[in-house]
Length: 387
Figure 1 (cartoon, helix red, strand yellow):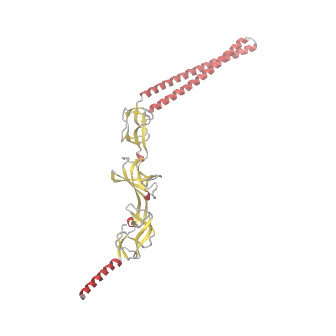
Figure 2: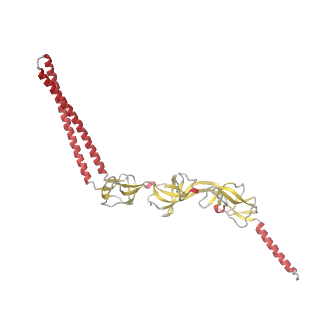
Figure 3: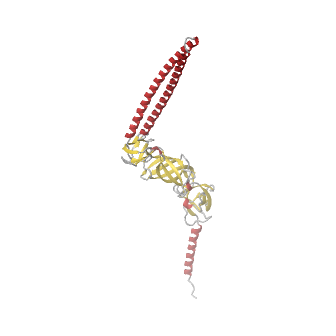
């Protein structure tokens, strides 16, 4: 059997020693790890995607049937409350109003005639009563026949009946006048309903009908929106919606104006969530009425839900077993690595989570997970984490 030469044995020993040294250095030497630098005044925000909508959106039309004879506004026009938007042909109704006015004047004349007859009947009754009293006095003295006294009494009674009839005629004429006045009012109301007016200050979103269209009652002619009621109806993931509240400030970015930010506030949070998308509906109103808007346009919303004065933020990708409220993270404690479970708070928009509880004093959180991590391994900190 050939013997190995000493020089080869020395070379093999050197290689083995070098390999063992390398393995030791890789496995047991202190590992340099990047750690997170605590952040100051960290904003907590929630993102939502939605569309521009109007809280006050109305389809307006005439309460009566008719033919559309005039259009005074069109899509895109701003209108004031009470402004006439369109007209129906009202010639027939104008004649009805004129007839009702004439009947009212006739009723007034009839009332005056009835009052004149009433005055005449009252005068006649007074004369007949005086004559009857004189005849009755003469009868009592025996200087007048009973027949003449009876005639005077009958004449006074007849005059009383005529006076009562005149009173009734006055009452009937007054009622007829009230009826005619009510008819005039009704016909004028119907005439006014031939004009379509804006119920509030609005922007005309759509014109639905053309001139000459025969319209049934209630058929929409225009769609109106109140510019000051325009907001963004955004959808926020339910898992991130727990800290939302009415009044929180927000930033809105429109798809057509990506370079501009609009300030707003949370105006309403719907009680009912989207069951399919598992999202919360949040309505964000602009601080000021927008001059230009397009309903249905896509918008991005960032809502400010709070701020942490000082926090250690760990990327969610580095959290093991994250369950929505906590998980395990790698820490550097007294020069050694440790996999520790901690409680985590609401995340930031860039995917980092604040450590709320479970981190001992002096412990540092790893910002990355380099190769060679092992429980209890010695390590040194390298300030490379994001604040």
